[in-house]
Amino acid sequence: MKTDKQLMIGIISCFAIAIAFFLVIVWEIKKSIDYDAKVRKMAKKDNEITLEDNRDFSIYEAAIGADGREMVLIPEGVFTRGALIGGFDEKPQQEIFLAAFYIDKYEVNVESYNKYRRAADYVEPSVPFFEGDHELMKVPQYPVVGVSWYDATNYCQWAGKRLLTEAEWEKAARGTHGLIYPWGNEMASKRLNLGGKADGFEYFAPVGSFPMGRSVYGVYDMAGNVSEWVNDMYNQFYYDGAPMMNPTGAEDESNRVFRGGSWDSRSADVRAAKRYAASPGRKDSVLGFRCGVSKKDFQEAS
Image 1 (cartoon, rainbow, N blue to C red):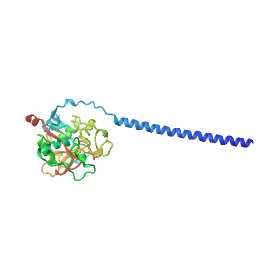
Image 2: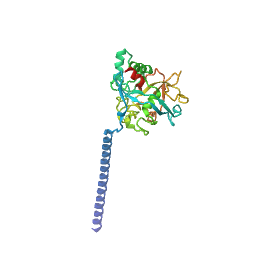
Image 3: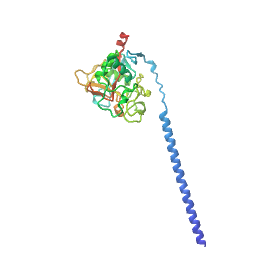
Image 4: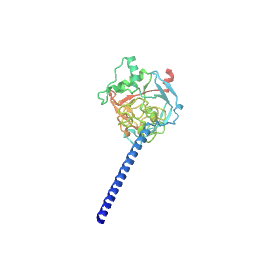
């Protein structure tokens, strides 16, 4: 009888321990689930936060172009062009002087380009291949894509402007001290639209969607979204021996330069010093433009 009683007590004790162990496991699982839910909630909250930008862009003069689009004045002076790291066509890094010029604050969007097309009876943009919905290319506030260098040049001339020189584009993108990205020297994926969906856009985004990604002059989307045609012909060795004042690019070359990376780029490809080149007739879903004009020419036309 005593042995049976001890056996019964042992069984009950083991059962109680098993129950307690099970409850501990359930409790730990619940804690883990609650913690994961908390982390997800915090992450969602972080994604919803609109970061404040305390930079003062009002110190830079603004103007309205003949196409009704806002421009920003980039003051005359010296800036650091090129990079110590990166492609050999970005070397040597040098101090370059540029006269003052205006640059479009935003990339040319579909709405503005359509006004030009209607006024000039101009051809509609097109791309040979785009994996997304082609209707995206018709959304008014999206950057216009599917435009060649010739198309971009024609629009800018119609608007009383021109394509920027490569040097002007770079100064507007990185300021006077050679920043790696428009906002600073550290990559910040939430400040631009590049490859992947983490920024909220699978393809291009409406122009001006990333205010924290503005350059020091307050110019939007100079990294990512769409790459931008500039006026210069491309020569991989151009920087070596180029003029130190108001350089306008190589001569007698077949390709034109575009800058800035796009919605399809990796983070390494959106540096402000990064150079790209393509045939001037190229039309692509990653390639758009913005215009500029020298301060002197703008004042004479006003």
